[in-house]
Each structure stands twice: as structure tokens, then as C-alpha cells.
Amino acid sequence: ALINCLSLPTQSSLLNSVHIWPTCTDGFTYDRRARQCIDIDECRTLPDPCRGDMQCVNQNGGYLCIPRGLYSQSYTRNSPRSYPEPSYPEDRSTPCILGYTLGADGTCVDVDECETESHQCNPTQVCINTAGGYTCSCTEGYWLVGGQCQDIDECRYGYCQQLCANVPGSYSCSCSPGFLNADSRTCQDVDECETNPCSHGCLNTYGSFMCTCDEGFELASDGTTCNDLDECSFSDFLCQHTCVNTPGSFSCVCPPGYYVYEDGRRCEDLNECESGNNTCTTAQVCFNFQGGYTCLDPLRCDPPYIELSDNQCMCSAENPACRERPFTVLYRHMDLSSSRSVPADIFQMQATTRYPGAFYIFQIKSGNEGREFYMRQTSNISATLVLARPIKGPKTIVLDLEMVTVNNVINFRGSSIIRLTIFVSEHPF
Image 1: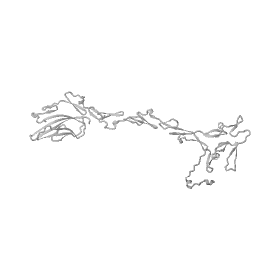
Image 2: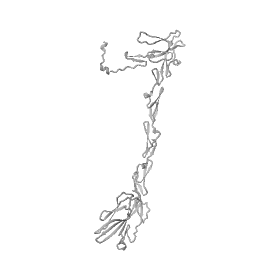
Image 3: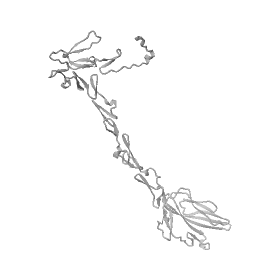
Image 4: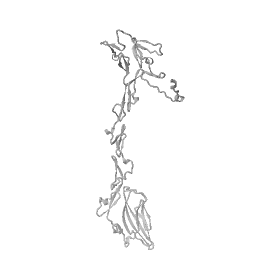
């Protein structure tokens, strides 16, 4: 009936089967044949389990160390295994068994081997008294390995959240910088920003912090202070004229005769003639140019010229002294920015009266010694003054622009002059 109840495993089931042996408590080992936990004979397996004049006596799940003179060994010769069994000597005058002593009242009381220091525990062990004997146990932070107490490395088992230092019988936890060890095991982030370590803004991070700077500043190498950014050193084009660095920013400054425009960077001419901020008299005419102004005196015509209007002198044809002179001299004024790009058309002149059969010649009669200008005729009655070379100011140039009228039908040749005064500014704006 027993055979019929069993089924033989196939080869595949044998290959796929996994045997898991049960674990036994301390002092026992698993016997696969008997399929049960059997006692370990520490007296045979441990090297020198008892010290001095002590005899090792195996017990179920452990062993005892007993003085050799207090017991005799007997063996069962016919049994498969022979275990030493302690037999205690009979002492009719001492009716108590080993581990007890006769008390004052005539009863047997336990002997406290730990108190009398009659135990065999080593210095790393703790003696624990038991009824009729004692046991040697390891102190906290140690465990029993091969009959000896060895230190437990708590750091291997994650006792600490961050840093762990193992010491004999114990351990010590610590935290990385930026954390606080609150309960000797876990670490909590420290909000460094509460102590205001930054000169401007502070941002707390996990285990640390980060300093921030206001606009116009940059973080210094120490990571906490903020240094002003010199925006003026970044580019020469932040301001049209002069850039002045300020803490966290910058400002643009314009030269005298200008003001800072709405965009805060460009310079605009300050019209002193319109604002009244000038020194011209009532007899003078205020003429504004880029970056300044000038006071023009009333027109005075040198003989033989006579005043035709407030800006024109005429030499009459009836006057013999006027035959080789221009018929009229017209006074004009204009301003010009320093270092203006070239070529540039800057002034135009044309004949106001046309005569049948006449043609006109336009030319620069005087003032163009540096050859900065030339005349370009745009039609038979007009021409344009062209700036050919950049002029750096401040500078005042007076050009006589001549228009020659030629009529071969009546054999006539005459001229008129535009006396053009050009005020070149100091700056290119």
C-alpha cells in the first residue's frame, strides 16, 4: 500500500526540481537522510571549547563546561553513536546537584557563577546566570561566530541614512555637509538661506544652497557675493557717445549741446535757438547746428555791392566797377556732421531766371583747397554740391559756389555767387 501511494518523478521533473532544505536553530543541523534537525556536538566540532581544567559536556542544542574532577564519563558501546553523558559524584553530605549549593535553611539554592566569577566566559562575552549553571552571551554589537564574539559591522546593513563609521561593538552615524543629524540615524536638509549667506538672493537646494544675483550683477568665485557687471566693457555700441557704468546698470551721457534721447542711448541735438538758451543779441540771428549754435551778425555788403535783401548783395550793371564782378552774392548757412559718410549730396543750386539761348556753368570758385567737394551738374539749369571726402570737426568752411550764365547770341557772360558757410560738428551725430 505504501508503494502504491508513491509516484516516481520523471527525469524532467528531477532536473527541474529545486530542493530547499529547512533551517535549524542554533546548535542543530539538518540531516537530509533523517529529514530532521539533529544536535551538533560542539565538544567535537569546536577547537578547545572549554578552557583550563574544564571538561566539555555536549547537551541538546548546546554544551556545558564542567570541572573534570566532578563527573565521570560512561559510553554506550552498542549504540551507533556514542555521546558523553555527565554523571555527577554522589556526596551524601551534599545533597545538591552541580550548580546548586546547600543554603542556610537546608534547601539547595542556585550558585551564581557570574557573581562569584567562577564562569569561563571570555572578556568579549557576558555571563548570564541560569538555574544550575550559566551561559555566555555576546554583548550588544557583537554576535557569536565559532564560539567567539565578533563585532557586528552595522554599516553593512544600512543602519545610517548617509555616513556610517563602524566601531567595536557599535557604530556612529554622521551626515554630509548641508544636512543635520537629528535622531543619530537619519539626516535632514538644512535650510542655509535662513542665515542669509548670500549678498543678494538665496535658493535652498537639497543638501546645499545657491546664491543668485540681481540684474546687472554676476556671482563671484566665492559663490556668495555679487559683483557689479561693467556693461560698458561689453560693447562700444551701447551708447552713441559715452557709457557710464553704475551699480547693476549703466547710463549714457551726451556731450554739451546734446541731450539723451528717449531710448536712453542716442544723442539728439539741443536746439539752443528754439529753447532760448543762447547768447545772441536781438540784432543777431541765432543759427543752430549739430551740437552747438552761432550768432550771425546782420548782413553788411562791401562796396561796390549794395544790400538787396537781408541775405543778398548786388552789384549793379550800371556801375563800371561791377563789370568783372559777380552780379549777386547770396549768403547761405548749413550744418554738417563730422566724418559723414561719402559721397553725399549736401547742397543744390539752380538758375531762377532762364534766358533764350543761354546755358549755365556751375563750379566751386573758392574754399575747396582740400578738394573735399565737387559740383555735379544735374540738368542744364541745376547742379548739386557733393561731399567727396569726410571732414572731421569742429570746423567752419566757406565755399563760393558760382553759376556762370553764357549767351552766345547776345555775347553775354555773367555770374552769380552763393556764399555757403558750412558748420562741421565735433561729433558724428
